[in-house]
Every structure is written in C-alpha cells, then in structure tokens.
Image (cartoon, one colour):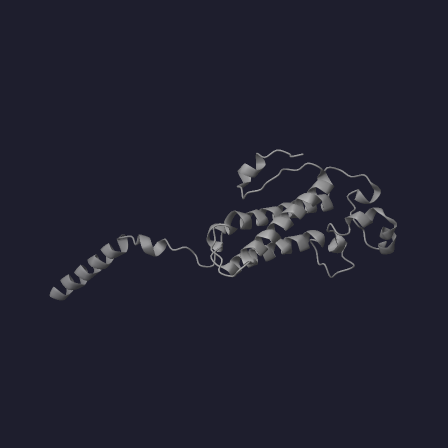
Length: 191
C-alpha cells in the first residue's frame, strides 16, 4: 500500500513536470539558418557576400541551364549571347533555337526570356551589393584595406548592374539600400 502511494506520488510529480513549459529550451535560433541580420559576423562573411555578387553576375551572363551544354536551348540564354542573336552569327548555330520569344527577328515584347532573366539577375546583383554596403561601414575590419576593397567591388558591381539595366530598359527603379519586397514595389522608375 505504501509502495502504491509512492508510485502514484512519483507519477503525479512527473505529470506536473510535463505540464510546465521550458521557454529557453525552445527559443534557440537554428544554427544552420543564415539571414542578412545574422550572417555578417567576420571579415570572411563580407568576402563571401561579395563573391555571391560575382556569382549572380556570372549567372546573368551565362544561362539558367547548363552553361557547358552547347545543344541545350538554354545553354546560351543569358545576356552574353543576346546581342549576337540578331546578327549573322545566329546562322552558325542554326540547330539551336535562340531566344524564340521574338528577339531573333526584332519583334520584342514587354516580356521574354532573356529580358526577364536580365532584369531578375541585375536586381539580384543590386540587392546583394546593397546588403554588403548597408553593413560594411559599421563592421570593424582588422585587415588593412580589405574594407575599402570589398566596398569598392560591391559599388562597382551595383553600378555595372544599373548600367546594364539602363542599356536594356532605359529608366529603371533606383534602389540603393536594402529594402523589403513591399518597399521595393513602391519605388517608381528613375530616369
């Protein structure tokens, strides 16, 4: 009988302990999730971020498909090949259907594969550059000259992206700080 009371008492304490919450245990940030607020903690992080800007530039100039494939329609779908699609060079690759959205015969529309792709990747470059530029001045670099080097690269790549957008589209929204999607949609066209 005494044994049953002890067992029931232990079960009651265990049940009560299961009903209590442990806030600090459940509030941990996942260590594998990076955001722009938590990413920039070392000089290497800024270097990685600038490298990511170059990666977006490479994607914009190559293609959404496999850049090593010469038989794939998407292999040359980037910005690099777009000017040549309207020239005699297209006949060299007659087996590949370049830019079949009308660009090859000067019947451009407001949308199209290469144009959409250029717009998307230029703004990816701009967004990544703005992310670096918004944080780089507040960070204390220990390596001499690295801050200016990385800042210069981010500014140059952002400027290059705006130049490309100006060449392709004329006036475009000018975004020089990191913004939310809703804030970005409120920005009008700049001349």
